[in-house]
Image 1: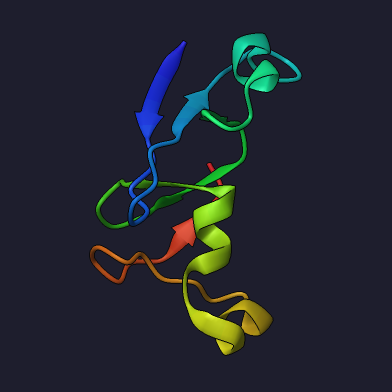
Image 2 (image 1 turned 135 degrees about the horizontal axis):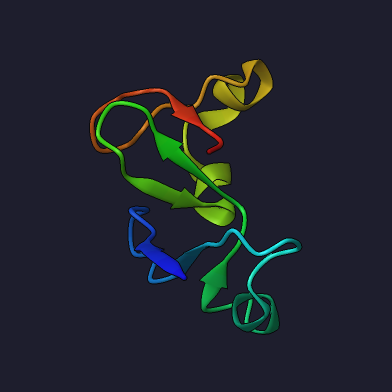
Length: 79
């Protein structure tokens, strides 16, 4: 199981990068500590969990679907 750490401000969630169909059972059982939904910055490679993704960008960015990485300003995409 590959693991990444969320790069969001003050976020300590781990990100399960799993090839297991349906997701990693350990991560699914503990959603406060683990994220199974995430995005990755195309420029710097940092990962952001689903909760931190909602915080990035503000109202207009959310409406337009153009969220940017808080570290480098790169585009975020789902792996």
